[in-house]
Amino acid sequence: MNLEQLKDTWQGQNEQLQSGIKLNEDKLKTFETQAILRPLLNKRIIEAIFTFVIVILLWQYIVANFGLTAPVVSAAILNVFALINLAGNIGQIALISQIDYAKPISEVQKQIFDIRQHNLVMTKLVALSLPFYGAYVFLGFDLMFGIDLYKGLHVGGIFSLLLGGIAFLPAVIWFNRQLRFANLNTGWVSKMIESIGGQELLAAAQVMNTLQTSDK
Amino acid sequence: MVGKMSLHQSFTAMIEHNKGIIYKVANGYCQHKEDRNDLVQEIMVQLWRAFEKYDEQYQLSTWMYRISLNVAISFYRKSSKIKEDTTEINDDILQVNEDLAEQQQDENIRLLYQFIGGLNPLDKAIIILYLESHTHQSIADTLGISQTNVATKIARIKHKLKHQFSNKETK
Image: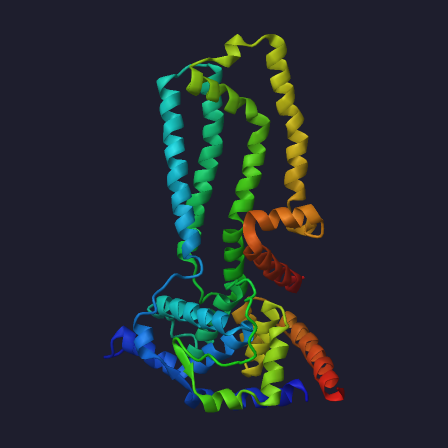
């Protein structure tokens, strides 16, 4: 049997389906439940609020201690990362709210893929902040112990902190470059992407891959 | 579209006239009954949300297919642990009567759903629209890819199908 013959068989179902399926109208009145992306939207809203609070606290700290000190510069650096995170979360909230399933499949699936890979993008952002780990240390010491660690450090200590940050840089660049869907054949990449974005992300990536192959 | 009827009444009437679309998409994308019921529910939610904005320049069935297929492709569910062989949706919003359940056991229909179930999500959408006699242009518009790609993909699916059905016949 070929596809043309199957088409007739397929369409032959229509009458049967019309008479054989009963619409549960009572259920239809109360069916408003969680949509696919609703849990994600809730998560992003919570994340955005949390990040917003961090941004405000960091700004408060910068304003209260304004000056060219290591903890203030550290707070400013960390604030940049927090702002990028906040912008990402707001973008995600807008994207999830605007999804229109009546649009072409390629367009909607690209949006869903962007939504699903948010955690992966944020992981890369956190990795990018690692070379600036000194910022966490300086700010942490000031907040917890009221100590400006930078002032107490010898030149050698500052130098090794700086070197440590620089040493992180190639590792972070390598890590972020590896963490791509093109490298899914690499065991640890696949496992890491799955643990960060879940199987939903892998499924969305597969759909995107099929769509992109179609475009070529 | 809405006329004198309330929005909900119009929606119910639309679903009543096109319930086969939702059934076929859900059956094509989900192998297990529970997943299918959840997918039907999700499709209904998105259809209802989009209903107010329905653009009459699109044919209603085309609009419904777009939404249903987009939801089905986005609907990710880890494989159910409980395997079931039945193909009907018995409870929830769409209820299937026993006669239909028996008719759906027709060998070719069963094989066709089985075949569709084995395709990737995008090919599932293409084959369902193709079986519904949508033109290549209409399928390309729904998917947002070129007509040439649609033609290529249909040719590949036909080849797979031929191979699969001839295998079944020789067994």
